[in-house]
Image (cartoon, rainbow, N blue to C red; front, side, top):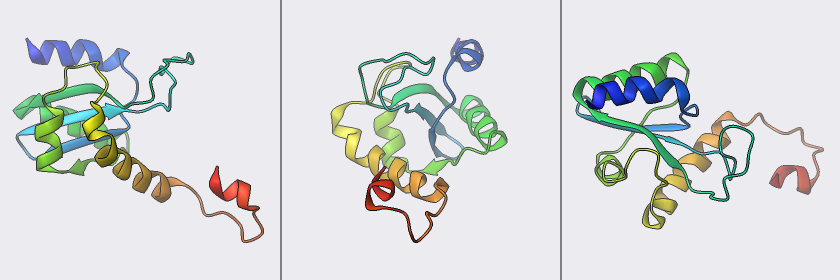
Amino acid sequence: MALKRIRYAWPHMPRPTLPVAVRPAQCVALAYHGGQDGHGGHSGLYAPKVVARGNGAIAEEIIRRANEAGIYVHQSADLVRLLMRVDLDEHIPQTLYLAVAEILAWLHRLERPALPPHASQREKIS
């Protein structure tokens, strides 16, 4: 049942922003669009959403697809344990905002190209 649900949901869900995994047992994929619903509209919510999760073979498939897409897979047993409690297509609870935000901010800094030295302070912030 769960594998069928993941196969059905994966092509229609937004691209995962952050899979969090504990190999090989569990994986949770989060998507974060900064208030966008992933389809160009505004969701009104700014929290990351669980877009895939699973154990065993399902977890390995999520990780494989993330790797193929060039998406970083974060490894954190504690965070996975907490995120596994969140239902599919639900936003993460406020209690996890800080932990997930720190990881997303770190990823943003890694992926963002360096600004030229003459960039204004306003450009550095945005």
